Image 1 (cartoon, rainbow, N blue to C red):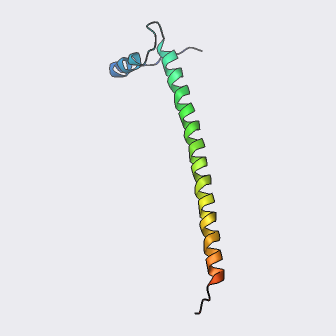
Image 2: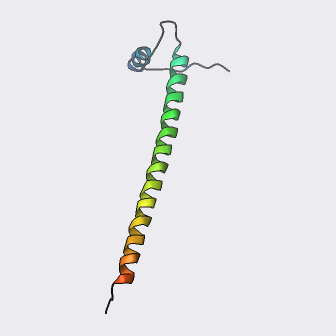
Image 3: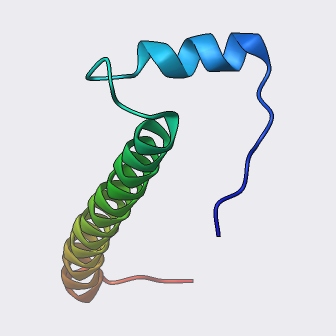
Length: 77
C-alpha cells in the first residue's frame, strides 16, 4: 500500500541534498539512509563486543598476575 506523508519544507530540502541522482525519489533516499543507519548500528555493536572481549582478557591477565603475587607474599593480618 502506498501512502503519502507530510514533510516540512526544511526536511524536504534536506532530503533533496541526500539525493545521489536527480531522478531519485525521496523514498529511495529514505530507504538508503535507513540501510546505512542499520549497517552502522551493526558495525558499532561488533566493535563494542570486540572491545568488551579485549577488556575482559586484560582483566583476567591482571587478576592472574595478582594471584601469583599473592601466593609469593606472606600476608599477616
